[in-house]
Image 1 (cartoon, rainbow, N blue to C red):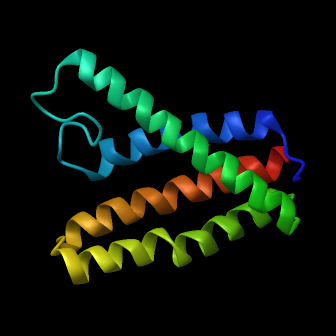
Image 2: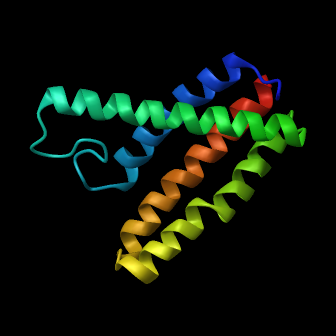
Length: 129
């Protein structure tokens, strides 16, 4: 069993969720990357909750991998975030472009969010692990 800090997981999840919201508000011309136009406030609240839960799972898995790998500093956490981004989200978006017809601009927007999110999570987990 891995030994990691619950504070690191929660702090990383909150920071990643807020960072992602800021990222989309800066880089997306869509009103909201989560929820969008024409979505009722009740549904939007549910979607925000689900998005936070997703980020919490990512932060917990990241903390477990960082613990096993001995990434216990913010530079190490950032490096792990970069490596994980290169191996997983970026390759998934390349697949979406090649096989599903996703536009490059949409894939780049979401890949950038994942990069930003994993670097934030990595820095927080590395500092608090």
